[in-house]
Length: 572
Image (cartoon, rainbow, N blue to C red; front, side):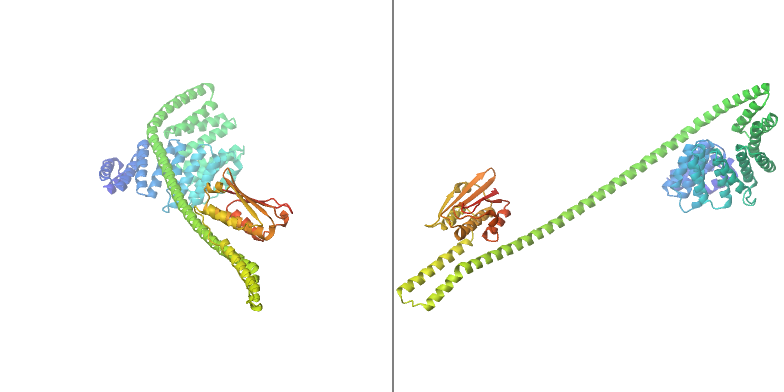
């Protein structure tokens, strides 16, 4: 059915319509997108041949939609190019630009160069007619790049030259057209050659060069030989304008009348109006009035007809514009949705990355802290072992050796020697017990305060009096286990240091709580030491390290012969 309709449409269009309609209904009933596209395209070609442009435009648009659904880019481009031709005939250059811009996105490898050349040439025309000469030239140059033969390139160069003339770049136009003038007649038709010669004449005319007339007549001669009726109208008008500029009204009127007669025969309204305008300006007063009246009537009549045609075509064009805007909105929405999904995807990936990074960082930190804790424990254990070893060496080794030597060299049967040895052994035992207590586990439970009191009391004797104030404050305050141990060990270190170096007779230890801080003050009346002379490599280094570990502060207030004072403060 479709093939028969196509053949009838081509060879006998008068009887083709029923077959084309039948094919259209069949495709619609079957919801066959591809055949619907072909049926719409056949009907568009039919109405285009009948010069029913509004209906043809509508069907070309419908066919474009169906072929777009079937992803048949070649036929989409064909439909858009046909729509462009109709818009050009209606002087609708803005929509013409729009459909050709749309066509660019559908051009594929099929007829690629031809389609690009056509589309860019159409864009050049639409921009030229809307006075954007710079962009028009750009599109014409692109069209020329894709031109597949010399014939097409010559046509495009002639179009470029016409833009040069409109843009008052007359020398550029003359240079280009002079090259085209010598084009082999086997490449271009006589009709195209006449257009080139006529444009060259116009360019020379614009620069007031007498060679213009010769080119006008060369073009006229070719058009007469070719019986190019439409081309003859252009030649007559150019000659009429030329002679009018030379104030030769007789010849101007002669060619204007010829232009008017040919334009009337060809039903070319715009050229009739141009010819009448020249006749008005080149005729005697009475004739001028008559030509002016004819010009007025024709212009008024054609304005009315064109308005009706414009209104008739407006609905079709409105549907096209609406659909174009709707497609644009849908494309925008699709792009926005795609962008949103992409952003969500990227956000999800980023979130996963951040989570994995944080997990990895957590593992690294835990391992680092465990390693640090392990190293710290080893270091503390080593320090403790070193301290105990040093204590044993400094405080007991010599005494044990002395006791052993005494036992080996003295007569233990003598009562005095026996008592001396027993006294030395008792002293060694007592000091060994003290070392054991210093390094034993600390009770941090309910018995912490009594245990702390006992530890401090053990360092007192008949030579040193130890006074403790405010232990009830410590008893009534919740203190973390590690801080209890720290307080215990710090005071133990200070008391050991007191025993070794202070030479004091009185020690006062005071516990206070101010706001959220616990304060422990140690004071003795010993020999003291200048702050700059405090050797932190001794036991006092342990004191400082311990207080830093619980984010506390350690303050010394000392002077030689004025006792030893320490203030310890830490948060609770």
